[in-house]
Length: 130
Image 1 (cartoon, one colour):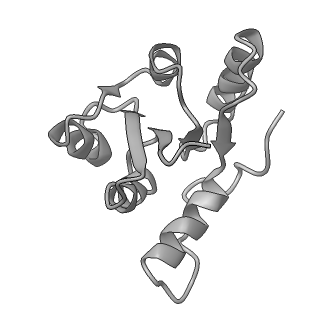
Image 2 (cartoon, one colour; image 1 turned 90 degrees about the vertical axis):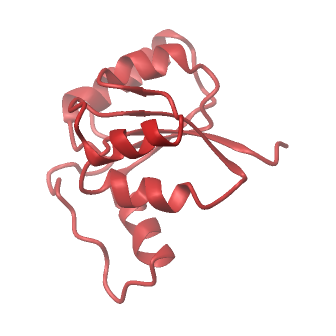
């Protein structure tokens, strides 16, 4: 078992940026890349300053960065979620764990010691999708 986790983040806006800030605090987390369709997203800018691979094409991130232990998707994009699962199935990737926005919200809330759950910006993104 490794002592380092390779983590990729898709969605670098309202939910992804606070999450990225928390993840950057831990040496055992290696951020292998951050994707957001907006090149000006705050998390993209932060990742670039930290010399972390960035892209505006989430699928490009997944194709280029093969060794991802945890993929965090906080986009709320149902079509993207399906595309990710299809790509993983096609490439026979059974290793990467896809972390849902709900878990990300819990992680942010607990790690920043909030008294309530961080709000969702994607209330229709429920479960693993289709």
